[in-house]
Image (tube, rainbow, N blue to C red; front, side, top):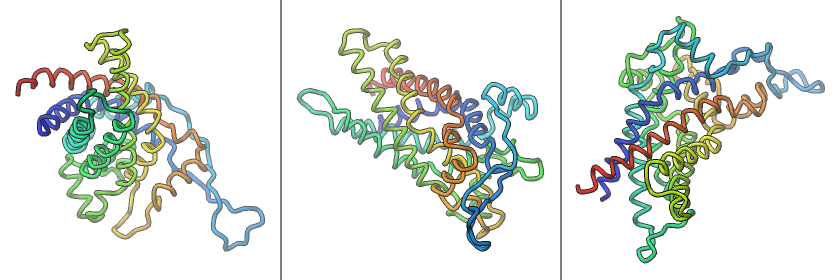
Amino acid sequence: MGVKSFVEGGIASVVAGCSTHPLDLIKVRLQLHGEASAVTLLRPALAFHNSPPAFLETTHSVPKVGPISLGINLVKTEGAAALFSGVSATLLRQTLYSTTRMGLYEVLKNKWTDPESGKLSLTRKIAAGLVGGGIGAALGNPADVAMVRMQADGRLPVAERRNYAGVGDAIKRMAKQEGVVSLWRGSALTINRAMIVTAAQLASYDQFKEGMVESGGMKDGLGTHVVASFAAGIVAAVASNPVDVIKTRVMNMKVEARGGEAQYKGAWDCAVKTVRAEGPMALYKGFVPTVCRQGPFTVVLFVTLEQVKKLLRDF
């Protein structure tokens, strides 16, 4: 039962991840839009000359851009194939991260379910999601960093692009040029985000589905799976977007040479600089494509999962 849970979750995750990759790419580009490209460090009026800068201020306003206009411009400037930049990293990420989180969630859920009533409390569902998401993210972080960089590469000037040939080349060059530790850059954020997403997504899906079936409003079928999964996707998007923005920026930051000064000292530093330079709502940059991606992703994920479970039921 344990191995089958990983196989089922892995197949569903790969199908969902690859089919919604363009939406994820647009989300990443929006999250990086306006990032400290032109910022000025300011000191308080009464500060001494040698005191450190107190806050950031943009030297010019950043033009607003929406997901549709960004997508159209991306296709015009980089070609339609650019919508699938980094898809090899997505494939590896889903294989490592989502297979692990989905499998562990099912294993823990089955282990913690009350044998007499056959029910599992929402608290335990959330706990199972937190554990599965955290372990899965730790394993998949190198692929996550590679994916973010490959998706963001086209927004850089031609001379500054990394031009990774694929996920293997990205991981190899990061390890060689920036050290093996760079493969786990932003891992704390990745793990935190994964725990939030997995707990919100998987636990809420089960909760929504059970509630609809038990209320007698809907039967356990395709319609219920679609409604429950879309609702779970919205819950996951709202809960994870701020962490996702910071994660994207930390993973994408450039370090000129090994040991060189990084753009951000860590997650908190990135969060503070982002809010000060662009305002609190910057943490919800890319929210519309996040919902547009999380909705279809979660629907494809759970609908595929339910069908795969039916196909593998006798194995």
